[in-house]
Length: 192
Image 1: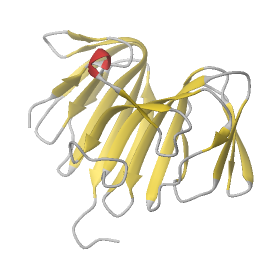
Image 2 (image 1 turned 90 degrees about the vertical axis):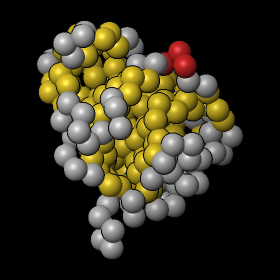
Image 3 (image 1 turned 180 degrees about the vertical axis):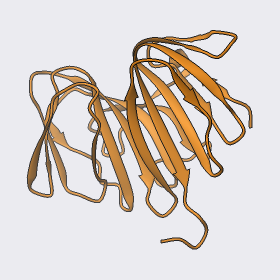
């Protein structure tokens, strides 16, 4: 599959699974999968008020504050303050998770993987990075702040634009700001 550039302005917002907010999907696999049948899903969420997070059975989540003053998450009774922007926080989607906004609405960046199907790692990058996915791996690069130039053709990625690299793709991103680099590895058949 050829490298895909995914533009922010081409996305459509949708209600959260629990109806408590709005999410905008950046990419998911398999393509066209809903919230009940994705292997992995990357999205942005507008969180306008405190309240419960949706429960996603069998899903691991990594959340990163992009805009706003952050939130206090109570995950299965344990408090975690997620206030610093661009610092990923991992937790189980199975957990009872309550969100208390610290000082007004936020936007968060959300990576979800169905643990039987995939794993994810999120790294925040501020300079040049070369991308070449291994077999069974996809790499999604999302500009969270500023912009990035992609490859020799210098395709410009603006804020919240993304590039999806799959096996066989390779490229270099020159980052002017902050970029989330998400490595998504498909589980081997028969692995736990």
